[in-house]
Length: 286
Image 1 (cartoon, rainbow, N blue to C red):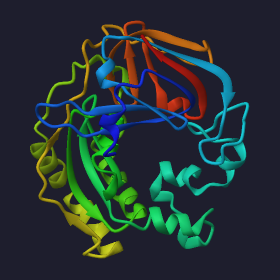
Image 2 (image 1 turned 60 degrees about the vertical axis):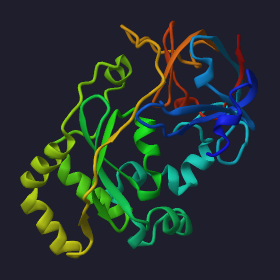
Image 3 (image 1 turned 90 degrees about the horizontal axis):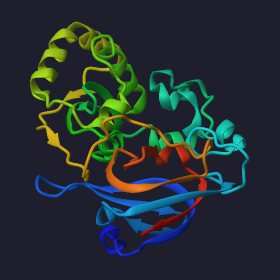
Image 4 (image 1 turned 90 degrees about the vertical axis):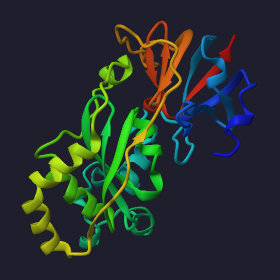
């Protein structure tokens, strides 16, 4: 993402949407957003407060194979890719149901490259406390995509299946979902994540010990990490969250008030660009 800061002067683009690139900031600098439309890029932070218009042309192209499709599946795939790709299988959403060992993985090579990698179990505060999992290499991207204001890695495991088994234990005592409306209102209270980690690990001590006996004592490692604070470029949070949808109206426009998660926050409503991956749009900033 080293070229994200070189695109801020671009003010128009056309092409199929992809999820926005997000580069981490620091205590003084909010994260940096880049809108992607085909091969074109627009740095959005520099355009906060400006009028932004996105118009869906009616065309949708699969984010994997590029073919035209009348309907998007799983945030941007055509139906054949949705049914054949490992990244679209249900075990991606529910990793504890991984079936690689049964010889039925849709794409064993892809699974080996993506699922048989170190994964992290983390706590995040996006609309309140939640547990989550991701590949170790996806931090902090995963937190930024969720609009988390705080995050803390707590455990590391060897592969995605194991991360799903651990997450399943945690879901007995803490949620794993983000309330996107609360996240976008910006009134999420800070949490003491180390204290929450200690509380949850103590509550699940016996369950985690049993899982270690099942999959190996060395399979689950405790991390001595410090919390990460994340700051987003927002001029004003919405008092009432109204959602825009290209399937209902081809044009989304208004004054760009902020960026959080994969959402554009307008003075007219919000839109989750990740939901509309592959939708061809014309973008203009005035």
